[in-house]
Image (cartoon, rainbow, N blue to C red):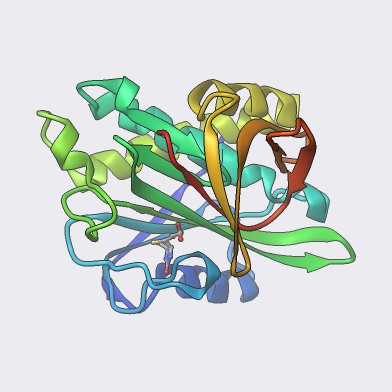
Length: 242
Ligand code: BTN
């Protein structure tokens, strides 16, 4: 099943995420993509700001996957794989890229892209799902990094966007036909290796443990020094040894 992407590009929006969610509520079809060249109120996870000057990629993608609520989070792994594939087309050295649970893409240990997944549920089924993607192409906040620093190739936003949507369509089709297990394996091949030391911020508490695996629902499995496995479904993960 291929998705017919319908891209709407705006010069400036407060947030493509809010615009796409509004259109989803109003009945827009799966495949709508809202892109803005800049955002004046870009949103990150946990209510954080996503700094969005011109030059980077900001888009929100509407899907209607008709799946159970607990499967919705699997689509952030689908989106991370699409981002990973598009970066591979540009990076001089692919080994600098790593996927970080649940949905960041790091280059040389610094965040280059983020994914924000929001859903509307009805009786435990997904009514719609909006995947917001921010990719730092030419600039990034101090704690992050931008693709431009890792490639000699020309960076043309429309081309990066179209490649991203192509890859997203392919991984989405794979998820639909094979379920999460294939996506999980592909993601694990591109993520921090088992045993990587991770610092997990849960609320205000910082925990130190080791990456072990992700389970069949995309939850993070951590191993403590004593070998105990802990399941993390939400929270912030910072990889110390990436
Ligand atoms: C994160 O915190 O890592 C997620 C960042 C998601 C940012 C994107 S940019 C396009 C879309 N519109 C928004 O306001 N946020 C998402």
